[in-house]
Image (cartoon, rainbow, N blue to C red; front, side, top):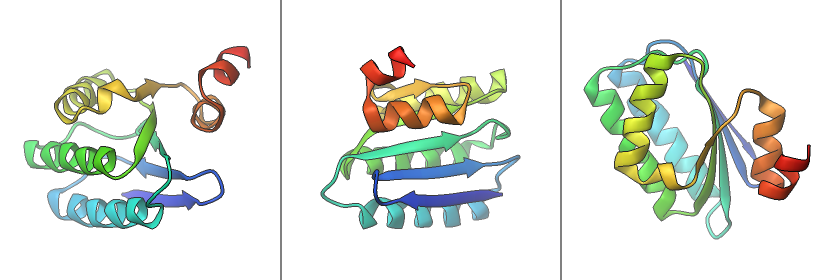
Length: 129
């Protein structure tokens, strides 16, 4: 299961990937995420990715995730705040982020509020909170 919400005021795409994602479901997710990204064209975009219940996926799913991350970087994504609990999922997501270049703009958080604060205010505000 997945969910994508757009905060147009703060230019943040909030997404949740939950459980094991099959390739056909990931295809729909990628299409919706691309559309969400393009809807914020011309602005610096932040992504808040809640991957806490995401389970490691088959290689085709990881490839689609890598490709949509590259698409995001090419279309204005400047920060990615990711929340992950599973060590196995974190390992897969680390590899995908390195391959896509997202690792350079990614920070990991344990809670929604800290992630959102960093996306809106940057390092200084996130560190002072």
